[in-house]
Image: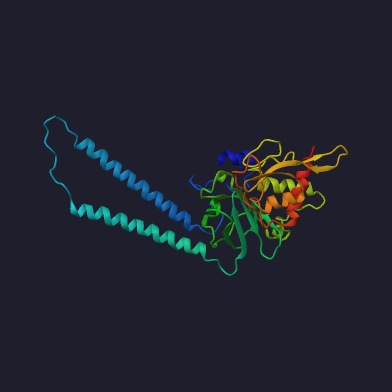
Length: 346
């Protein structure tokens, strides 16, 4: 995961050092990413558990070390220091006290979990859909969604309805101290209030397949004035190719290349080509429809069907792989992807 983040943003570490306005990557104890929401009780539980573990480790190790030294056998025929087989009061103590501590941890975590799940009425409502291996975010009263990038307003409660399009995922933003499993066929809820401007990491924290480690998203916390400009709408009608390239980098780069090298899926290079007159035309491609092999000509309809119904026709050589379909992808986004695909024609 670290290698992937550095590949995506090689200047990230340098920026943390050179730009003090950005939140520090870790807290003052050097343990957690700096807290950027109101859920500070998560840190309290973490450090309470941490302290209990350290105390128990030191106590048990100390008793063991003392016993080993104090009661070590000095001669071969030395008798046992004690013939006691058990100590009932001691066994009760080391059973009851850990039980009390564990129950405190459980109650603390349970109450915090309930707090995160019950979305307050004043929260701005978002919808997050997880699929292999990307995120889609829908905004309140807005037809435009964003992929793998989320914009939130600082100091404004944000509530989420979480949904999976395929397998088990998890919505995890370390800086906000929130995590929620996303179970297929079930809607989950979560909320938090971001308190600091900046960019933060959102991860899938449940193994969800081959490219699970690449299921990474950025959370942008911006001012109220910036939020009003709808920064998630990055469509540029004057440059559809650039918009298509942004969509490709957000959704498709983990499975498809544009340099001719195959990954989980075929490369986009060569889908379209230029004829002798310089016109862009679709290339011939062998596909499987079920178990039947066919040759088709790539065109707009083929691309649309491949995006929305990816299991209908599978490219030969990749018929054993599965692509997550995007049945709800807008016509506008698909047209931008097509523009980018055609710009690769040679």
